[in-house]
Each structure stands twice: as structure tokens, then as C-alpha cells.
Image (cartoon, rainbow, N blue to C red):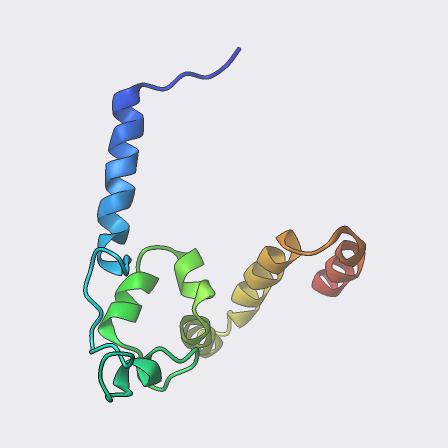
Length: 119
């Protein structure tokens, strides 16, 4: 028996997802600071580096959406790891990232990665 959902519930979920990611959509929102392809200002490229000393407010707001968004950003993962090290619980985030990397692993790598996680 297939599970059925109402069209209104599916539409509400779609609208909620749209509203959550609206400000992060490069086609629907302007690029701030100015685009380096249009001007000589390199600020956008510097702020968009994978690891930055001081992340932008836009980047931090994206981290607030979910743990997946936080861990997908190298600066966010670095910051949460530093915070968890202060709390003596950084092994939790290391385990979480290892499991998510395991999901993307090839079948031949699974056994070695599982044994590495276990040890």
C-alpha cells in the first residue's frame, strides 16, 4: 500500500523550502559585495574562500539552516570542531563527518572506512 500525501501538504513543504533558501539563491538574490567579474574589487573572491578567518553574516545564516549546511562549509566545520574541542566532545563531529563520508564511499572502500571509524 502506497502512502498518500495531500497536495496542499506537499505545496506547503515546497514553499517552506523556497523561503528558507531564497536569500541564498544566486539567481533570485543579488551578489554582495560586488561581483569581481564586473568590477575590480576582489572582496567577493576573498570572502568566498573555503577557509576564512572571519566568515560573513550571510555564510553564518546559512549554517543556521541545518547541520548539513554547517558541515558542508569548510569554515563552518572548522568552527564547530573548535567549539566542540572546548567542550571536550569533538569526537562527535568527527564521527558524524566520517559517517557522511562513508555514505559517499565506493563499495570497495566501505570496509576500510568502517574499520577506521570503529577504531
